Image (tube, rainbow, N blue to C red; front, side):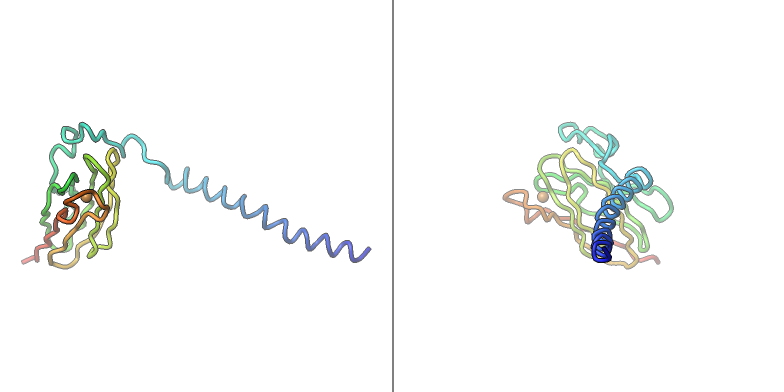
Length: 162
Ligand SMILES: [Cu+2]
């Protein structure tokens, strides 16, 4: 009799975590989806790649100051260019890169700021970085996108404050 009870408790000790784990994961999923709003991008994150060059903000690619010291760099990628290929910001700026591709899958890698993103046609990619030090920081396409993939790059020039 004693032996049976021990076995039952041992089984229970295994069964409880195997129930608690998926329940915990489901709860974490609910918290991230409905609490932190982490999910698939909605309409705001999409853009029609066919008309992207006529669609704001990609009809006017470039740099916009959205607050003191904070910038938004609207970048359109295509075979085989970044538009713009040069961005100038003052030292200490925070830059949000808002990007998309007008044709095939491209990449955006800005190693100095630890940025690594994919640029998908139809999808808007947003990444933010701070540039505390003056210098020239290249960004490049790191998704093979055709014959001239290797010339597809641009640079962020961070100018010293005088
Ligand atoms: Cu590319």
